[in-house]
Image (cartoon, rainbow, N blue to C red; front, side, top):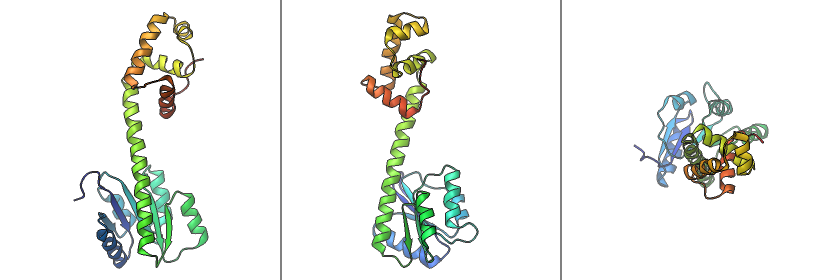
Length: 209
């Protein structure tokens, strides 16, 4: 059992010898891994929640690797992919890389090339996960705002002054200041610039000008 938060490398290849060889290599450098003979087996598995990447053979029974890459993207599964193949060609490589693959290795490849690609992929996944975690935290803060505080936030980040916001909302400048203070505190923003960046990350619609 992989400890929570530890990285996992998933290997999908229909050749058992290739799977065993890659898993042996990963074990030798202390990287936990799980292997599958088909893409369907991988999809049915319960995967640990931690940084991960996929070492994927291009030619698989049923669903080929490039189709599987597209299927994962369509399903919103963001996992960095390293393709391995015995039959690579330039158009295939270009297609895979354009779709976001980390690396495309043609068998036989050097162990170090695979390990380098895996470390790069895991680093990429760590960054993505951190960004998603930060965004989820930001959304939580935004959801703690009242409807009026959200209105004030939208107008503040659109560049309006307190008195303009007061006029827009039909309230007093003092009330706007209080709401603005609540917004800054609940969003944990140290400055207006930081609040503007937070709103951009949340992709909030701009407030009324």
